Length: 308
Image 1 (cartoon, rainbow, N blue to C red):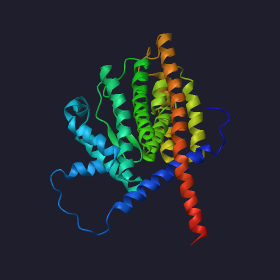
Image 2 (spheres, rainbow, N blue to C red; image 1 turned 90 degrees about the vertical axis):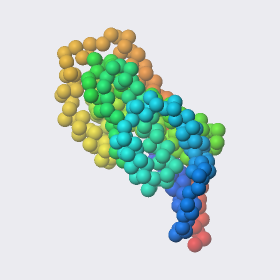
Image 3 (cartoon, rainbow, N blue to C red; image 1 turned 180 degrees about the horizontal axis):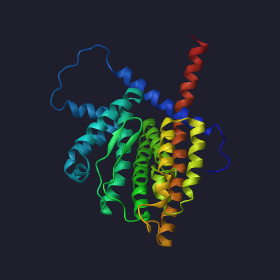
């Protein structure tokens, strides 16, 4: 990150994102009739309702129409994944509205799908992803990677595909002008950057072991600094779990686990730090359109206070 970033920028960006989420959550509440009886759903009405969601509905219609092309993804998932996804959408929707919740959970799924595809390509058996509301999602490896390089490939696969998903949201936001797409893009870039903190069990911890195991200590310093600023209970749990497993992580599963060719170390290092830079750039680009929502919300609040 450049040195000209002001200390209050992180707080301002968070307020921008919160303003957009409140805006869309309130819009969803205003469009929901209070106690009106719901008429029976006629054939074809669900298509009209999907179209009413705007770009998200168009995407869902396309996915339903092209379902036969999604069999590889369907094989990757199981009933538990679908149930926990729906549970997460419901939980996030209570606070941020259904459209954002649906997009956010799908971004998490794309991230986990990146891990799963790399594991499949590397011959590593894996379980289906399980979603945990307000925590994220996890996917278990049922067999160990051959060496630290393969583990790094698995670790970076999620953030790479997750960043692609966030970039797609950014492009849709640029084309349509919808702030919710910018909010999804910003959130997607942010959660993928968070996952790149070099602490086990985060993705960053799995990646940097092949570069240099000293980076884990740098990661703990960064993680502690972020915790002291945010007091995030999730980050505290991650730091605690990583601390308990630090000894076994440093040793590796077997003696030659970290013996990797220099060119592979270099390739992972370039990919890791390059991805960090791209994610920081993506957050900066996605944040600019959100500023107008926050500014408008603050102006409306000021007008209400001035003219009760």
